[in-house]
Image (cartoon, rainbow, N blue to C red; front, side, top):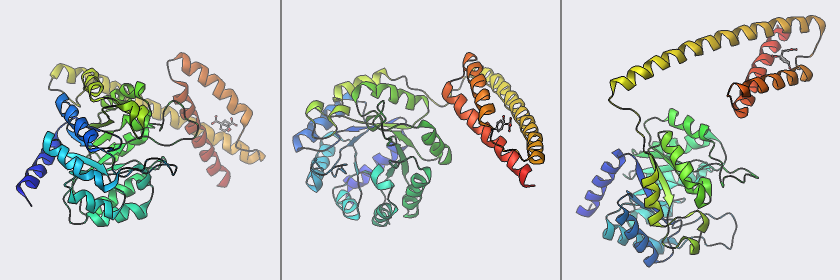
Length: 362
Ligand SMILES: O=C(O)C(=O)C[C@]1(C(=O)O)C=C[C@@H](O)C=C1
């Protein structure tokens, strides 16, 4: 390994421990000048830790710009030499992994369209065996946590030590607010499942447009994400891919200054005391809610017994609608969101049905 490669590995190790980690750069590498100019402007902001650029672009339809290919890798290498910014790119095949490593790319990521395909992830994992490079796994395009975990586990089994996650949202038909619905609960579940892995948020792919990037980036930071990956371009409107979602390096700098950065904890005894009191109240209320839910299910069991004796169906749509209307109205007045009430009612109804089914089958 050359001294330059060793120092670059050291830099990555340091970077991995830094919070937040900010990754930015163009959706696609287009020309040498564009890559170098973007990298220089990003480095000058003092807010960016790593340069990203798409080299191979998996496009939904043929005939679109599919990336500059391996020709762009020396541009990234040069941009790193000039700015000192480590580089990150997406890889989807063994050949792409080899090409990326030949040109000293520092961090690789597996794209959403690759994570859905275990054959492809395995091919990338096999190409990574014995290699010391950090790898980030994007969520699959469909909301399937098992696929996402499967991707992470395949890469981990190849011996990759520095692994991370990228949350770029999930495809959903007819969604107009987001390009890819964030479905925050799924990313939170992954974070809880793999607490040791840094998780990055990718507002660019979630939003698909510039004007909502800040909102999503702020929410990610509020939720204790470890980093952000945001696409930037020296001339976003004329970008060869995803023009609407890219921002200039200057705008990226502004965004980084506008975000309210939060930490997971603070050394302040007053804060801890106040929080402890409130958390005790929550523990108490959680306990009461469980007791009440358990009582409700015991009543459902009794209803089940009457239904069994009289050969009556468990599902009673009229009665259930009555409950939905009443609970939703009351719940909303009490400050609970309609979305939460719907999920809560669904869960209660299903549990009640399962309880009664057990009684009917006994
Ligand atoms: O009221 C009933 O008939 C019940 O079975 C109880 C209950 C409920 O849990 O509230 C459960 C299932 C029915 O679809 C409607 C209501």
